[in-house]
Length: 188
Image 1 (cartoon, rainbow, N blue to C red):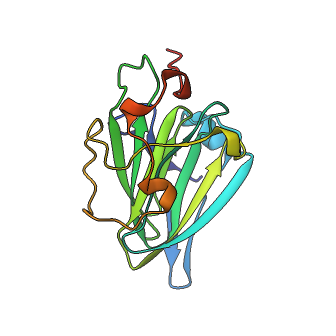
Image 2 (cartoon, one colour):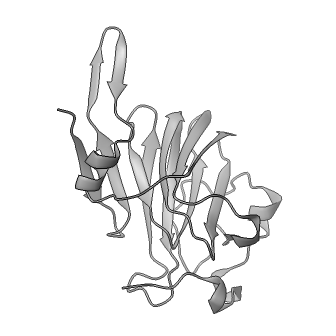
Image 3 (cartoon, one colour):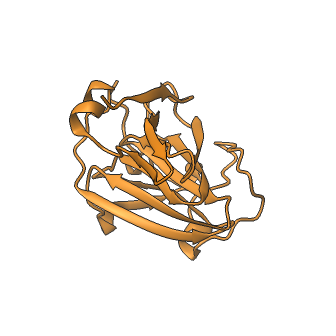
């Protein structure tokens, strides 16, 4: 029977998942998603969209979220390595403004669950990375939102000082500049 290790991050709702890997001289095999097994482990999600991005060393994507119409994301790396970050931006949450990070790589095969109501971003720490997202809701342009990657309100300990950013991410607002109604609400 396949097993996996699931542990909570600094943010209890954000889970780090480490699958059981079977390897021999031919290569390896692991289960990346099994609805029943993940539900038993505490991740009961329905995914409706799968995305892949490819980035070079030093590229930082984020911090992104959707509101309204939030997305939960189960993320992993197919090639290379990233430093992956989730930030709780739910108004009224006891961990509002707190963040958690995980190193995800093709080698460690870890997955990171970023629930609805959290902002998400990553920076590539290898020569290149191919990043995979399973999303609980489709992308909606009108709900697309971002926060500044280096907002002092979060004080994220990124492993790069001067990342390569898209224009959108370079101009993203600080948390203090976002209207309350443009942030998710903590449901308790």
